[in-house]
Image 1: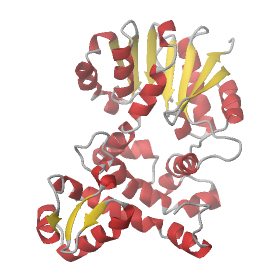
Image 2 (image 1 turned 30 degrees about the vertical axis):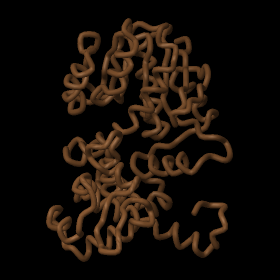
Image 3 (image 1 turned 120 degrees about the vertical axis):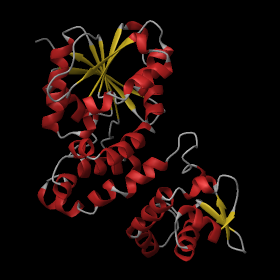
Amino acid sequence: MTLGSNEPPRATLLRLASGYRVTQAIYVVARLRVPDHLASGPKDVTVLAKEVGAEPDPLRRVLRALVPFGVFTMDASGRVGLAEVGELLRTDAPASMNDFALFQGEDSYRAFGDLLHTVRTGETAFDHLFGMGCFDYYARHPDAGGTFNRAMAGTVTAAAEAVEGYELERYHVMVDVGGGVGDLLARTLRSHLKLRGILFDLPGVVEHAPETLERAGVADRCEIRAGSALEFIPPGGDLYVMSRILHDWPDDKARLLLANCRRAMGSEGTLLLVESVLPEQHATAPVLWRDLMMMVMNGGRERTEREWRTLLGAGGFSLSRVLTTDRGFDLIEARALPS
């Protein structure tokens, strides 16, 4: 049921308040890779439990609870199979969401459990809970960092399609700031053969980039640079792209990132942000929940066009235009203000 349906208010509140149970049930089956073991067809739960290292009765009850959500099927004999939603949890599925489910059920789940602390104090829940920022935490805990990076990689396709629809033929060198292992830049260079690229991210991230760039056949047109964008951003580009970077950060650090980018690009370049532009009113639920995720995990936020304009101005840019796409992200074009 959805908000605004004929569902009684009490039932709606019960469903909303108990949503954590669904999150953890999906996390459990993703962690045990149950969908992978059902790829060949339905199985008896006893057999399945042995394969995934679980006890039959608790596993059966978790799977049964997910049947109404379209994750699994279960027949009268108790054999369980994959339903359409569950197919997305297979690790070999196109655009698999297995790592996204793991991320939602682990670090972000624990951080949201400290949401009250953020609301009372304004402090970031993740920092309070783990004693450090999430990016520092992921750098020190490679397993958690790997899960996070793979979960975020699932959004690269939509972001890359949005960027590919931009007027890239006007530019010569694209600098992908915080570009991870290079998925977005590789796709962009592959579709624009005259464009060259500079990939910039933390040392522990870009060390995995050469494989991505080689596999895409664009390594000869891409330079890899390592460092923190909070300290510097490399010069040399006429188009700087930040894809889903600034929403991670509160305004003070976002301004620092923009100021570093302004120093790197000179006066003639273009800054292209791949972000969501929050409507002043009537924003959709996914954007609003993503805003809370940024608040809890990083101290960041989603921003309205007015807020983006103000933030960009403080960082040395003027907002030229907002390009709405059908990919789930907006493109925010900005020009450098005179020094």
